[in-house]
Length: 220
Image: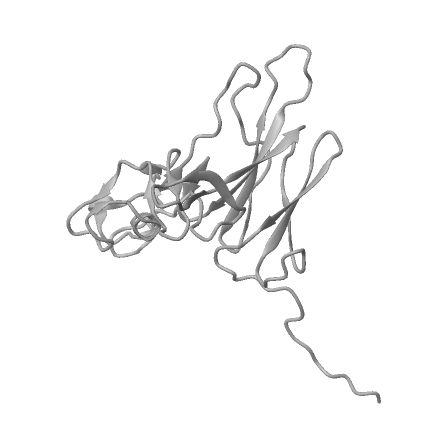
């Protein structure tokens, strides 16, 4: 999966050029509380506005991918490999469209069955931070069971939706079981007829349900 920026010059002007330099975040893991990031081999060069050295925290990674003023470290975006094949399923592929709301990039992946007599595969729901292609330190869809040496959990980026093809998620913002403003619910239906709802916490909290304006009418 790819997240591509509009190419810019070091002055910030759009160049409309070819996006050829993408950071591979397939192995990146983000952790709660400390905002630590592991699994990346890239590093920042001297002169970068984001600092020098490893991309060891989420804030450094986000700055590294966002900045354009230092050409030596400029990246056109990120890329993430989907789940590979195994003895039961073929390699995962994205079929439907993604949704982007409140900084959360939500899309599905589908793994067709590799068994001749099995019609249905399995689907996953991905929830990434759009700017980095990774999880977000304040988890969008929860935490994994993996922890670092201090007991901080790795942020979850995908949910197994079970058997069946699921294409494009629909997002609802409003009151669910979590009434916090800015949160959303991803609603999906599989090819087996199953409806799935996944609660999400939006990273940017920019969307708000409810009335946005009013005008008083007087009877003549």
